Amino acid sequence: MKPLISFSSAFYQNVLRPGLFRFDSERVHGWLTSLGEAIGRTSAKNILAVALCVEDPRLEQIIHGVPFPNPIGLAAGFDYEARLTQVLPSIGFGFGTIGTITSQPYEGNEYPRLGRLIKSRSLFVNKGFKNHGIHKTLAKLSDYKFQIPIGISIGKTNTSGPETQAEAVKDIVSAFREAIASPAPFGYYELNVSCPNLSGNISFYPPENLRELLRAVLTLPLRKPLFIKMPIEKNDKEILGMLKVIASFPVQGVIFGNLQRNRQDPALHPEETAKYPAGNFSGKPTEKRSNELIRLAYARFGKKLTIIGCGGVFSAEDAYRKIRLGASLVELITGLVYMGPQLPAEINAGLLTLLKKDGFSHISEAVGADNGSASSP
Image (cartoon, rainbow, N blue to C red; front, side, top):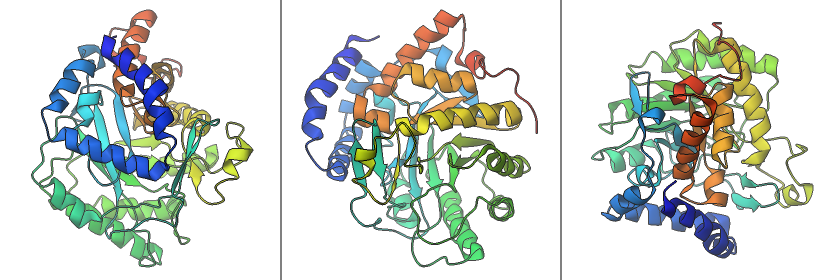
């Protein structure tokens, strides 16, 4: 591992994090994304890349025609103002997702929208698709070039606008139309049907509703892979019902998964959740169910759908566990907050060690190693 990775980790956790954690979470998020955007505009990003990036052909993959330099990505929900696309590769990310972006702008749910549950190693999240809207976001990115695959996550506008299933589908399709027409060189699209912090009663979980949405989206000329962001609170039977629908369409993959809604989950400390009566939770409380669903999806649909693991990734071992269960790619957010911005580089270095230990010559050989052979639906 490069010496600066270890130094950055120790400096962040022992010096920077204690100071940052004295301030409001959303304010700190704004400061750090602004800093990341500023670095991405200067040659400082090149210095960071030399110091931190771990490049190795054993980590490179081409998935659905898209070249991923390594399997570690930034999940949707962090860069919802599209500030970090130019700096992500400099701190070791192999891909990243902006958003979730919606057809119309949304200022976010009522405060508080973000908070820390330190004992639970989690974040309270209740932003509700806070974003500038598809038009303004795409205008910002129209002249950009991306060094790594950058995807855009699209979801339903969180306002009183779309009140019926048909209106919600139309709203999402309109955002996809703008993204497709944009000159921004997106590497993939994400359809987020699983945010638990939205208003109204519209749901895409019932198979017929999901089928209606996918039928509408996939009439569009996407020309890039489409991944579906999945919930983790549904039982196996419900998830398999959703996966059966998804696998019947030309969808390339699924992401497991989104936030933890179960406040009784043993990974959550009740005295911490009590501070936040509304909203849901990221990080370690999502890890167990995320891993269970990665295993399930790979075992039943692994030959049809690429699986992206997300939830509770704080180390190389956490990421590797998801890979061995069936994830070809791994996303994170909360780990950055607790472990530091060097975490992607740290994970990549650790993955190389773990691959060598297990006798694998390439990351793809480890995918599903703990899960037997993938099946077709």
